[in-house]
Image (spheres, rainbow, N blue to C red):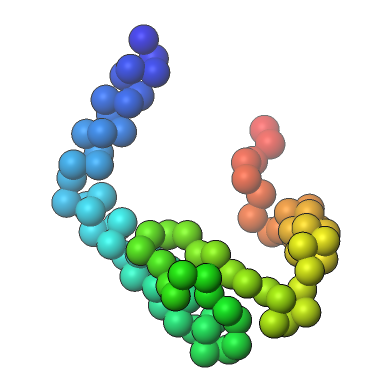
Length: 87
């Protein structure tokens, strides 16, 4: 029952003008990020984005999958923005 209630609330929020404005701002930011990265020499797969996701080809920068994986793990350990706050 809680899942049904949560979905109902989420869908209700998605119908508001505030949510539509928020989503548009996210998409605009992602497109701006894609253009900026592209101007700095990062290859963007599919020439940009239509949503909040970007797919980057980092081979031109000499970044292999292994290097990216290690850096991702280190950044998640050292991030100043934890996913949750411990009580």
